[in-house]
Image (tube, rainbow, N blue to C red; front, top):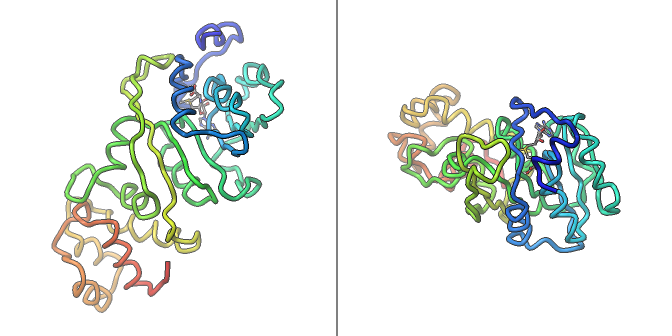
Length: 266
Ligand SMILES: C[S@@+](CC[C@H](N)C(=O)[O-])C[C@H]1O[C@@H](n2cnc3c(N)ncnc32)[C@H](O)[C@@H]1O
């Protein structure tokens, strides 16, 4: 059944505040599942199951799917998938959910609620995920992929690129959603780098990069002055050109600075 018919049948009133733009084109869901090469022994976390279009495409592979949805209004439409024995539905706020029940190396495949993109990405980066395929707004995808020197580059870009290999795997036109959002989407692939930061350091690193970007248009030195002392800045100066803006610095140099300042191993 088409998504729009499902919404009518179950009397669902979409909530814009929850980013409810549902996939209306089943073939897009199937394409994502194919690109991710989902296997029957995979354990998948799906954030924001919505009306279950992507959920069902995932379930058909035989993979075990933990589908999280905050909106209780969607209970009945998602319960139609109850006959799949490989489904566990969780009605909760993903940002409040403790993900430690998931096995190490779980995969996350989701069309995420756009209004909380940064928080969702943080939640995944701080988990034991193996890889993730996340549908995000096209502009957000471009920002995440931007290289040093690109004014699009922000603090989330640097943190994500420090921890993960990322690439765009699919463009999805806005016409594939109900209701149509204002902009197109992209599916971005995230894979944790082998030498990734451990969680304890990740929080510190997150804060460090965020502080470096506090005033994006100012030089790195001016940003660093707001939270580091003179000696720390002098140490950094020997290695990095602090007259550059934070957006001009590679993620490798951010990691280098962080290690110099906090003397932390990865
Ligand atoms: C963009 S829709 C995707 C729906 C579905 N996966 C699809 O592709 O059609 C995002 C979904 O996330 C849900 N959502 C929003 N905030 C959430 C949160 N904090 N925790 C869990 N789900 C959330 C929304 O209710 C909505 O169903």
